[in-house]
Length: 119
Image (tube, rainbow, N blue to C red; front, side, top):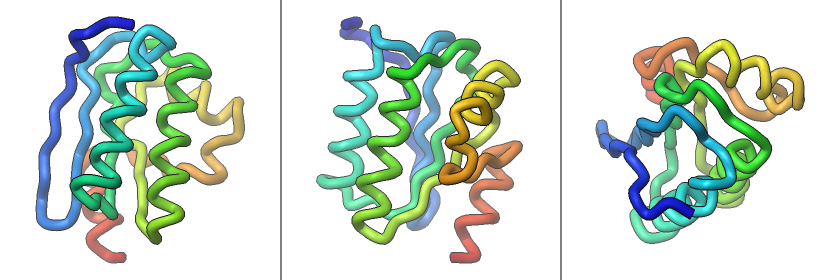
């Protein structure tokens, strides 16, 4: 597993944006991302999370598993999650795996923020 994962965290009120600045969201980084999500949800008590995937060209089942971990933690804490700006490949994977039924996908971070502000 790579030690050096490139991501950004931004907070706007009660909304946290996690932007993954990696081209590949696969098994090599999924464990690290799961750890970050767990810390965010439990230590920082994040209730509204946006995962910005605009930089990710490739995602596999390990990446989806990390996203689902965040979804499950938030769901158990009555939180909300949005997927923002997925590339065509990543959006297709989410749709093929039918995760778009449980994960709300927004075209941009701004759209996701507007959606979460109304909750």
